[in-house]
Image (tube, rainbow, N blue to C red; front, side, top):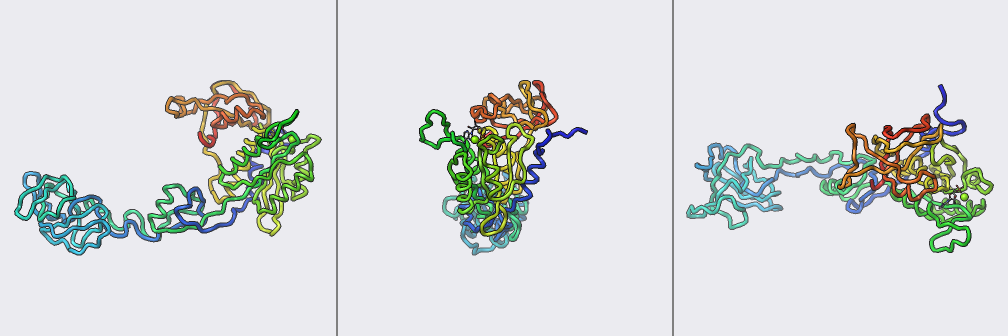
Length: 444
Ligand code: AMP
Ligand code: MG
């Protein structure tokens, strides 16, 4: 059997497995529930109270004994004496006995003796002299002396039983859960005022290259603006990390080392270096990685992004090693290798359990060619309906087209892409209409 990857290169899964083996989730802190949006749960969150804590009414109406309504019809309603009124937040002070009803608001605690609520829509109020008001309009007026019930209500009708949503002590959110808006509402609603979440992993980002210029710097005769520093810091933030800007290093070992050590000093959990990791005469990044730690792997069977390197460095205070990623300088290679190898590692550092993009299937709109022995990650764009929904063929496959040029320097194509289409190592070309795996990207 021929090896699926080109000689001298490491396969994608083997590389990711080697990287993740070094990843230990970062520490934790307690935060107030209302400000936990986007944080990753570190300790199981359990309900402090049952929900509802006591049986309450699901409707505005009358708390009754269901048996009292057994003979009620529209033509021959049952008359019940109204003996009290319970607003939401009020403690019931009356007990419903046969032949009586208590007016009750949605969310108010059910009084003793009642086993059902008649919605106000099924009743007609009667004043003290027996004069009927208008049928079932609302329950906002003065308390009627009695009410007519026009239909049968079942036992438990319009009642939310105690703990029917949640029992006190029930698991609300296991470790690794993302605090979405709904998760915040759930925890707060179950009486959880604060919870333990992971710290955001701190990730130093260093651009390298004598030709790379920071924002506002004159380009001169041979400079280009820094795309990777800002792009990678944004990718770090989107992956749940806190980016640290280590600036732009010259193609100079001492400068690269000084900036990496600066990142280590301020407590980085991971370092990302873009550029200078290839085999050119000025490529000092691998030497820098070996100086601050070790290089575990270099050159993976991907297109774009082959010169990717990974290693670790020791923390000054001991503990889990600092992850060090050397990404190729071409902006598309940098972004794609981040997707493949850095994003899953940051998510695991951040305490997430789901590390990879959701996979889909797609059909190519045009033929493609690629290098043998490497897995290609094509930047593609889904065809979409006017409402923005991706179009699928009759087998359910997303119809995609190449998002511009596929060169590893083509930033315009990267920005236009909403997904990566994956072509296996063993395939050199695919015709239009071929089926491929698809990874949706952020914002797709
Ligand atoms: P390197 O990996 O250093 O050999 O760089 C490969 C290509 O990517 C060269 O054309 C570089 O100019 C370009 N490049 C490297 N770093 C950046 C960056 N931070 N922003 C934009 N382009 C870059
Ligand atoms: Mg360079």
